Image 1 (tube, rainbow, N blue to C red):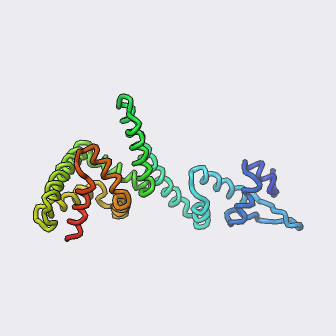
Image 2: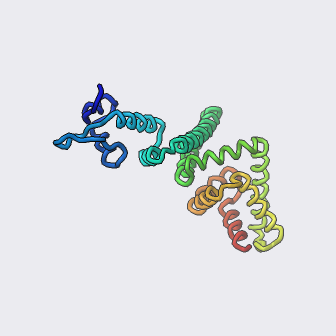
Image 3: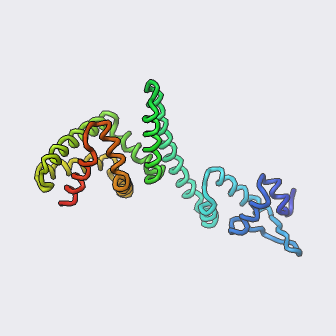
Length: 240
């Protein structure tokens, strides 16, 4: 077909709906180049090319407002680069989910509470951290390497034990040894999100909102009174 296309003709040829074309027109994404005397839309070859680009970008997952901005400015490469970065982050996040599922599969008949805990923790993470932020944490752990991650976790458990001892002894939070433990706790935490203040803030929000629940779960697994230790740690931080 050459010349111009009616809305129905273009919808059939382009694999879209008439309603979608009307929506694209309403939001200024694809306005027909012409109209008949009676007001019916008529699309030209340039409109067809624009529709092709819109559909191609939609298939890549770009939102309509981002497509409109990239087509309007001609800055298509930036839009594609941003989309690629987002896809990379999602891929890393999926890789981490795969690792968790593999760990459950490797556990002989995982108990329901293990499965529910995994789901609950993932739901909490999804509420506070974007897929890209979660992927950044995973990538940072990968940079450190499994041996370093295990070493830091072991050291963290040691800090918990020492902080619990001070907490039970009601040691003043200004005590030099307590200050040393708090500083090291901060250093270990920053090892996993060294250059991401937004991630650090969101994790802080997560612990502030759900610390009792998370602490109770960790207490069951470590045998330590985590909620009390974390409350003591917060007081020590505030004593700076």
